[in-house]
Length: 321
Ligand code: HEM
Ligand SMILES: *[C@@H]1O[C@H](CO)[C@@H](O)[C@H](O)[C@H]1NC(C)=O
Ligand SMILES: *[C@@H]1O[C@H](CO)[C@@H](O)[C@H](O)[C@H]1NC(C)=O
Ligand SMILES: *[C@@H]1O[C@H](CO)[C@@H](O)[C@H](O)[C@H]1NC(C)=O
Image 1 (cartoon, protein in one colour):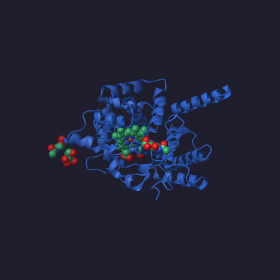
Image 2 (cartoon, protein in one colour):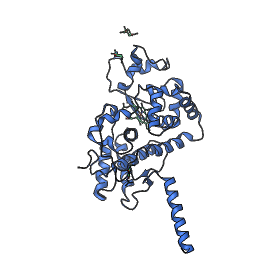
Image 3 (tube, rainbow, N blue to C red):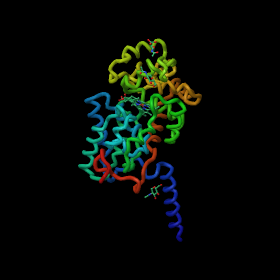
Image 4 (cartoon, helix red, strand yellow):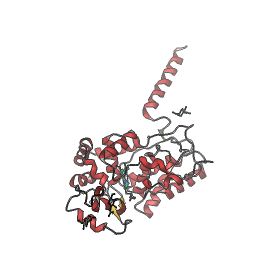
């Protein structure tokens, strides 16, 4: 072997090794830069337009990716009609925006861009539009060929104990600190239906009491918005203080008993998650935004399927025939 060949082989191995470090399997930033160069800008403009029409769009699209990734990985299975109907996905939206983006992309590059990637790109654009951190999203996901409502049990529930929340995140490869930063980032914007709140106001753990962790000043406020036999579809801000800005106020709320969701309040029930709440509520160096962006990238790698396990769906709401 000539020395130039040795050098080339060495350079190749180095690049390969480098590539493996930077990405998960086939995931990489700019996966479609050759095969569908407009994919990212199409998604971005669909998200921007939908947000201009309806300011709740960013939070809806962010929650959609969370629910996608926690059921069998980020594989677009939540978009398929039968999984979408699962009770665990109650209130999840954004399906129309994903469909619109997919159709525009298919018109330019048919059969190239996965629905799972469109979900991930849309969530990234949503976070930036909501005033959260701008970050690059890896692409190259494949769409799952299996979607079943029963698999949605992996989704964290508002009534879960901190132990259950931790183990559900751990099952997806996410630490206690990532549980806190992702939940804080998700719940610093957006809203919830009273449906998810009433039990902790009137019948916490089935005992006809309110959740003792609710600040006594906040309990009447919540009860006024969500009366006992009132309209369960009335919505309230998840961050009652600064619900329209992406900031660390959400952690201050949790600390003071101003959590709207019981699962947010439970983040104080464990030494490691409480430590993370304290860390982010006191931060003044941008670590919340930075760590949230990094955790979003990590969440986007959950259970990514390779070319034999997954497909590029033609329409996002059904696996290919
Ligand atoms: C600890 C586990 C979590 C639980 C139990 C939980 C539960 C919920 C519930 C019950 C709602 C209200 C849904 C509705 O009424 O439409 C909600 C909203 C939301 N969640 Fe979470 N969540 C969790 C973690 C996360 C994570 C990790 C993210 C994203 C990174 C996220 C993002 C959101 C967003 C953006 C909304 C607002 C949706 C909207 O405005 O329509 N959540 N969550
Ligand atoms: C309170 O919760 C318990 C247990 O979940 C349930 O059996 C009961 O029907 C609830 N009561 C009301 C008034 O909703
Ligand atoms: C539940 O608590 C409310 C208010 O404290 C009380 O009026 C009601 O009788 C209680 N219901 C039951 C079944 O104990
Ligand atoms: C995809 O992953 C599965 C399971 O890890 C493996 O058996 C299969 O060989 C992989 N296929 C490709 C094309 O990498």
